[in-house]
Length: 157
Image (cartoon, rainbow, N blue to C red; front, top):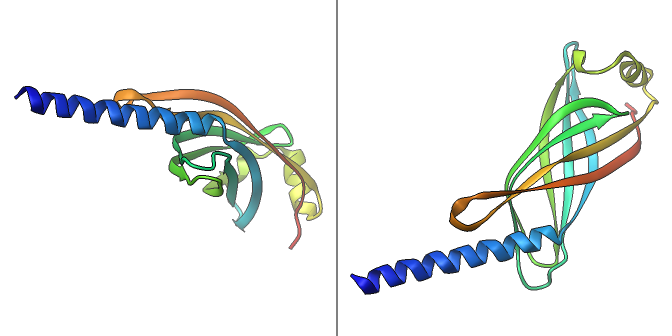
């Protein structure tokens, strides 16, 4: 019985150490708001694909993102909540994480709607939020991030 408990404790400790290492690797990753693409629109809403590029600088170990909760703004006005879950970034690679969002027309200010309706307005996107990585015993450890801006996005047909 003692051997079984020792094996279970060792496995738990190994898993916790592995999770902590992947979390540490995540803290060393670089994040960039790669694109915000209008995919569909109608009289009541706009659909967007939001792509976040996550670069794992570690050459030997993967990084793991348990969850990301953020807010996307356009020209400093709130646009949408962005959520990503369970993303693994392999060593020395870039993972393009995509979130699909549906934004009601009423969310946009008249100024932003005017830029969109003109078809050539310049929009400035900004993404901030909190990423969570898995700690020991399955706890989620938060870390605030400012993923940055993706600006001068020209809307064209």
